[in-house]
Image (tube, rainbow, N blue to C red; front, side, top):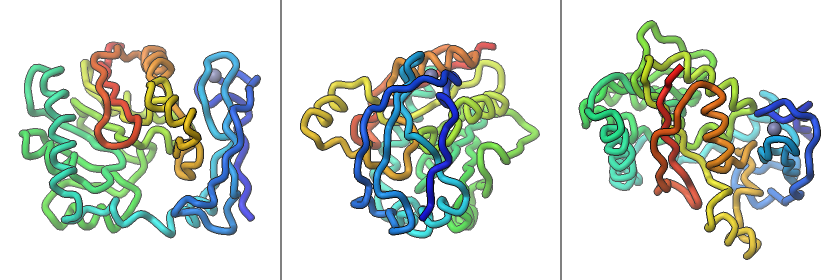
Amino acid sequence: MFQRVAYDNCPLCTHEEVDVVGTFPCRQHALWRPTLPDTMRWLSCTRCGHVFVDGHFDDEALAVLFAGANAHQLPGLADLDRGRMLSAHIIERVVRLRGRAGGRWLDVGFGNGTLVTTAVEYGFTAVGVDVREAAVAQLRAEGYEAHCATLETFQSKDAFDVVSLCDVLEHMPFPRLALTRAKALLAPGGTLLVTAPNLDCHQWKALDRAGKNPYWSELEHLHNFGRARLETLLVELGFAPAWYSVSERYLAGMEVYATLVS
Ligand SMILES: [Zn+2]
């Protein structure tokens, strides 16, 4: 039986005092296996309000979790049309914000690959990074630049004008470190895009009231961000929030766009 590696303190602000939000069952999750814990205990930091699971998985437990990786996350024909449409909306927001298309775009955790392929269609030089070798091989075979790496291990001699983290930050054990790494890859004035579920929105609260909020049982997530805390974190790291939009990708999702200012 795998146990979570407990957080010593808030992964965003290092404060040690927490409230317990609640404990939720996760046996029904598609990736749950009997060697993984069957509940998730969520905490909230009493200083900054950040909401997170009481611990993250080590590499061994993650291997079990990813052994049943979702087929829909591989590049392929399934949902290609929908993925292209969703990506187009994101890319058009970035173009509007930056005043032009083009430049270097890094998509971290590229999933089905449609943000990379659609960004190229719009005139960006797009690069995808993902930890799944099969997904990387497939995107490369289709003629796109893709690397098998994590945000921590990925290296580039040239900076990027846009870095996107679409539904990946809530999976990362230490989001502050991840965003610091994203910042290091960005050119001055570069655009950061983070998408994640938004616990500040009405839909989230309505799902809670109905007892039907799937995110408390989402085995792959470690954090439940709200727009306010995410934007404050970005400001702490030298970004200026520049645009907000509802995410069409997932339930109760948000898109936060920020400009690197310092
Ligand atoms: Zn905190």
